[in-house]
View 1 (spheres, rainbow, N blue to C red):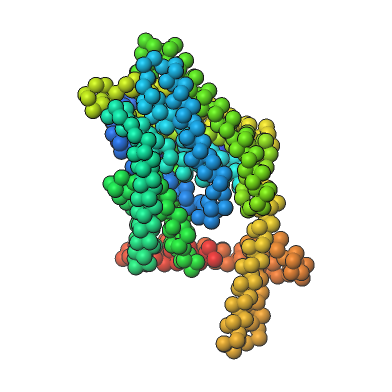
View 2: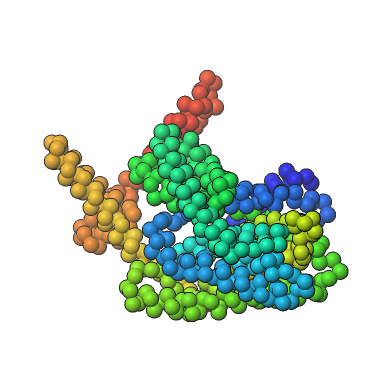
Length: 528
């Protein structure tokens, strides 16, 4: 098997792991990691030969962009305090604790190298958190905080990692220079992210065609990451800013085709890249195993100690941090989404899985220092890092569904239904207001006016059938039944039309492009 065949196996596994994971109740990223481990144990499977410095630029931009599409700037702003407590403060605390313990238990490990180890195992993986938590039916407030933490903690961890690596390689460290580098990295990333977001938004308007717009959306996160890194900024933060800008300002309510196609496209990208990323985690296990040859007992002990530090620090930090956030929330009456019970706090604790970023940073540890000497304890750092990744990702990933079920943490479905009903009412009322504006300008026949009024109400009913309760649902039940019947017949008519047009594709002299264009119009019509 060569590298290309291995890539196809991972892509196939990424697709198959989703339905298999749903049936087994196991998150797809965990299944892909296990698949990678199995492949790594097979003699005919080659070693992965992706340069470490390319793993983050290749995998993180599309994954972060896809994750940001599921959130919004206002949602982040509403939860900025709990997110920053996790994404910034907790990363610092975890890094310091891991560095202290690693420096104490690993003989001869310099402080700078220990800080680098702490930084690369500190951030929970944004992809693992959203992929696992999103499938468990957790309350939206927990998913929002986990998504925000996962999206922004890499920024802090990667900057700390680069500062620590630079100190270990050069042998010098300046706290003032490190702080200045952190600030400048954030400023550059914000400037690049906003500039590319604005430029991409304008370019999408000029392109017009949905296919070209979606193609541009794939290039934008890579461009944002690379440009920020070239200017010594944070590529991760730049991608997040660009994605948040586009999610906020690049949405045209009437651009149905681009929105539907874009949603499908990014779901596919997210599934495939996530699967490959976690498959690579399992495949890279052989590197860690090779470094432990002849020292299994000693190195497993070190890895177990760091795993305990990472897991316990998160728990001991979350308990007071959640309590403090609740107190501030109660005093200021802010509209934040925070854990409301100890059960939800426990679920947040156990959701701190490490993944792609930790692997990439571990593999990117330099081989030598500036003096030409070997990087201190590089093999030990890589082994410990992989021990933390495997323990948190596989153990916590496999047991998180059981824990959620055991604690009874579930989304507030009634609240979601109520909000859906409110949106349905607002949509119907907006349609009615627009109808009145049209009637004020145009002379509509009474029959047409009544028909359009019913259609305006039906817009809301299609979204939430329960909204009829607020507007004399009993009087409209007959119309709703008629609507469903009309909808069923209309779907059958459109289905017959699609079959006929599709059959014409294989007829002699038929132009496939014209057939596909007509078929696309029918598909869009079917969604209305």
